[in-house]
Structure formats: C-alpha cells, structure tokens
Length: 401
Image 1 (tube, helix red, strand yellow):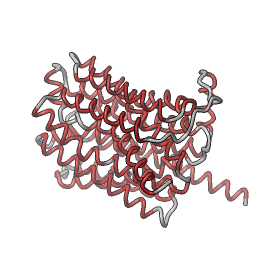
Image 2: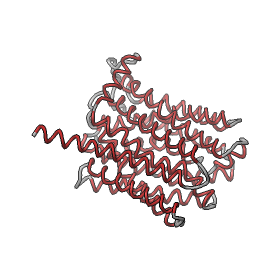
Image 3: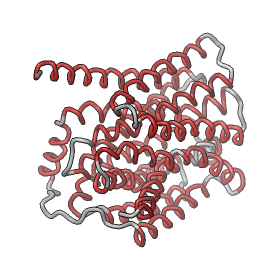
Image 4: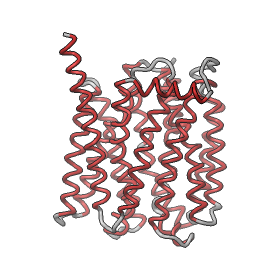
C-alpha cells in the first residue's frame, strides 16, 4: 500500500465515522426550535438523542456478522442508503414521536460506518499501528463537534431545523458515491461465517469471553459515557444556565471539541514512549479528578463560565487520548471475526452512551449537576475496570513466573 493510498483510506474511514457525530451535534443548537415547532418540551426532544444511541448500539450488532460474511463494502453501501431515507423522514417529522422513531432508523444506517471503519483498520494495518491509526481517525472525527453545531445553528436560524436533516441526507449521498467509487474491499466474502441466530450468538459469545475484550470494551464505553454526558447536558448548561446564544453555544462547543482533536494527536506522541494500557489508565484517572473539580465548582457556586469551559476542555482532551487506545486494546486479541468484535465493541460503547444520555435527560433539573455527576460516575467505573485488569495481569505474571 502506497502512502497516498493509505492516506486516502484513512480519510474515507474518518469521513464515514463523522456521520454519527454529525448526526448528533448538528441539531443540538436547534433543540429549542424543534420543541417549539413540534409543540413539546426540551426533555422530550432529548429522547430523540437517546433513541439515536439505542439504534446505533443495536445496529452495530446487526452489521458485525454481515460484514464478516459478505465483506466490508456492500453492507456499508446498504447502511448509507438506509441513512438517506431515515434523514428524509426526520426532515418530514410531523410529531416528536415520529422524530424519535426516525432518529432510531437513522442510527441503524449511521452505525455501519463505525463498524466497518474499525474492521478495515484491523484488516489493513498491523496491530502495533492500530492505536496510532485510531488517533488519526479521531482527528477527523473530532472536527464534527467543532463544525457541526455552527452549521446546524446556521441552518436552523436561516432555513429551519428540518433542513439540518436535508443536509445530512445529501452528505450521506456523497459518502455513498465515494465508497462505491474509491474505497477498496479490504476483506472478501467468507461463506463460513454463519448468519444463523445460533451461529451469530456463538460468535459474539466467543468475542465476549476474551478477558481483555471483556474488560476494555465496557471500560471504553464507560469512558466515552463521560463525553456523551457532556453532549447531552451541554444545551441545558450553556443555553439555559449561562444564557448563551446559539452562536455562542456553537463557539464554546467547537472550543471544547478541539480538546478531543488535541488529545488524539498528543496520543500519537505518547505512544512512542508508553504502552497504550498505561496511557489509558492515567488519563481515565485524570478524568475522575476533572469530574470531581467540575462537580465541586457547581456545588460551591464558583462555576464561572471560563472555569467550566477549561474543565470540560481538559476532560475532552483526556477522552481524545483514552478512546483510540481503549479501542485498540479491546480489538487487539482478534485476527478472525474482526467484524463481529468491532460490532460488539461499538454496541457496548453505544449502549453506555444511550444509558448516559437517558440518565442526563431524566435527571435534568435546570442545573449542571446531572451532567457533572454522570461524567464523574462514568470515568470512575471505567477506572475500576481498567485497574482490575491490571491487577489480574500482574497476578498472572507473578504466578507464571
């Protein structure tokens, strides 16, 4: 593979991976307009975010066996087509119930890019490079929180919130054409991969039984939960609590998202000196500290806007480091059934996201405490899992030695 081909594949995979985040972040600034137009509450609109995470969780489990059986490319194209149709349905929503349902289907289409992206990285690149490649993908993915709210806010203000989904549909059409014409197939069909319910269940059970995956998949999901708690709570905190305009909210959201970008690139430097597992553990511990400081700032009523932005930026900086490393560690043990492993990892991550966004929506009380507490809790549980794996590994090494 030439350097140009390598960069081209990474760019396409990054673009596919942004479809999910764009689908989340673009309509956040339009929450109030959606609620007004559909005659509902902000909390009810928040359930359209939760339904999206449910869809993206279940959908990944569906695509895993498909891409192991039929290859990577054709299931990817089918998912993108489904996304186009669902985005059009969102744009035509007559009620909040319709929007919540259409967002669920939309997620079923969007999640294919996540599953296929991780699988192709493991197909084409050595295990030693995967964490660095995932960091590069994070650079592309993290651009979406920086740009999406601004684009979504502009569309919502000028053309109406429905045009956000029209644009998303057009973007998906463009990605469909790029994949069809430019993305090579990284793994051909495998007729031995079972699509029977029992065979699929056994494939997932085999992946889930791997000790390393069993720890790092939920640990990765819990760590990402802090990010999604921020995404779910940000509109309430910045629009309601601090009274920012949609334009100001977009700027703050983009600033914090740059922490993800910076963290993912600092990770590439850290990987030259430290192991992924050590980097992950330290950064999750830092997330706990930042979660404590964020919560205390609100409890003690010293939560100035610059301080809150600085703490959230730092939290997302750590997340930009944790995500690619935890993903690489979870997928490291697998040389076959990579699609299934990628799907189960993504499913676990998104289940955590669905739970977290649901918790933040349910606990919404006009303060930042639900967001801060959920961010802290997610990081704390992730650290407990990672630390337990380290202790078990050390004990096994001691016994075998």
